Length: 407
Length: 133
Image 1 (tube, rainbow over the protein chains, first blue to last red):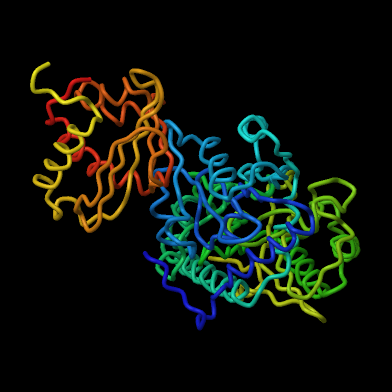
Image 2 (cartoon, each protein chain N blue to C red):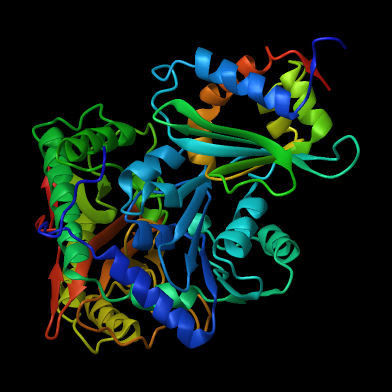
């Protein structure tokens, strides 16, 4: 589908302005060319879905040049704002391997014989983070004599932190779509619909509803739509659906993901398949209370640490502190941008969420809370993209916070 | 051999150009506008030679051979004289030469891959020039 978005669209993102901002930061840092390899960087600059290993070269002036796997180059060229000639391919052919096309573009086309090449390096919990590999680093050093590679991912990270209006509008739409998925799942489960149904089946029902509503992908790397039922709800935070059938008296966790124009919907909702025992109901009520309490405290100036304190204090009061997993959020941005909060180098553990990061208005994150009592075969998860404001936050998914009992 | 034209020489170029203009159907060339330079390394007698071809609207508008630096082209393909000769003789496909690194392409591969069938058509026409390598 050729790119058709215009400046009048609520989803418009000024990508050329993003490039200019990157170039200004490069100039300040003495970086002559920036080489982006992370999906988050590709999404942020290209405004196109770019899943294969790709190399985005940003010169100090002018448009970037992308090299991506030959099988997908034409499609990416069709969807990005970059001129078609700036979207190119690499391939296992003479002069067209990754190192050859990158070095040729830098030295011959950009005309920079030597200098500083900003690259993206680091560590992540997220497998497809896309940092430059050791092999690539050595290959570039060999192909670019006279060049010094410097880690500069923080340029993109800093610029992508506060979301612009177009990005926020896209996230609102992605969340609306997730709500369509949650509604479809609710309708499929009720009136005994859950009987004989499996985790994979409800994942598919939601996926179909979300696709019909405009989603392009259940983007999540940890299992697309993550579903758990029964004892599996108490196993942790990432649960790809299985063929397990739902059973009466068990909890059910539905964590749905949508993607709209690279913005990511991510809402996790929980149910009890009736009849629920008083103990199960108590766990559920505790969790809803905790989520509600934490959501009330997100605002500019709050920190992950302060939110964790709010959460744990309330959990102590409810008598359920033993069941809470640490932390109550993770980062989010356009496709590929998931996980840590704060800059990579500002916290006590590099590349992890900085517990003292002060939220600012315009930041988006996922409020993500996990409650697990594995010995009782019970767990719940809440996730919802929230937009930080001066005095509070906006929860983008509007599906009502509750843990209903489904008969 | 008698009647054969020296590969990349002036007479070979003239014959090649005449064949290209007579036999390439602009419609089948998809109205393409591009330019391509083949750079021949290790030529007999030493040095480099080039073959430069330019198309506009699917028609060959410029076809040159020579020594030294070629005119600037959208795509350049560099390889040994023997490799190019083997391709022209039909002994080696240009795709295999690229895949094995015997030829090195510079230019937008995403576009080049779409032009590959057209390049094959050009090569087939040039292969009909009686050539002494």
